[in-house]
Amino acid sequence: MVAAIGSGSAVSAAGRATSGSSSQIAALQKQITAAQKQLTESQKGAQTDASQKLQQQLAQQIQALQAQIAQLQAAAAQQAAQQDTQTASSADTVTSPAKSSSSTLGSIVDTQA
Image 1 (cartoon, rainbow, N blue to C red):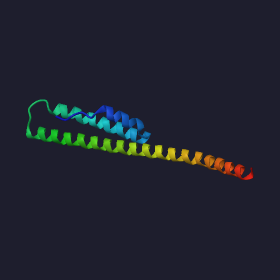
Image 2: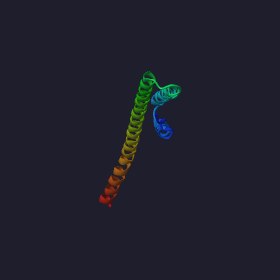
Image 3: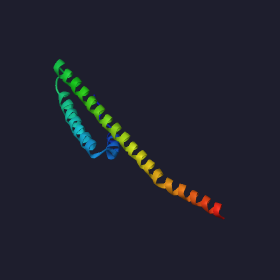
């Protein structure tokens, strides 16, 4: 039996993903759902070699789709982390000149006094 994909992790990572990867993840999840339905249907009735082979192929397909979703989620998380880092770096750059000019002003005042 194949375990269903964990919806919690998919939703949280998809929430941080870009719109492009979110739509890709949604499409992959639909493919997983379709493959799971087909797997469930193939398990009904007599188990022949052909049906067992089909079930194995469907299970492998589901695993591959889940791996693709995990890769998209990891890429989206990495992209979000890079954007957070760039935002923090930009904020440091903006505040940095103000700090240096105030310290320069202080030394000018001290020198003239």
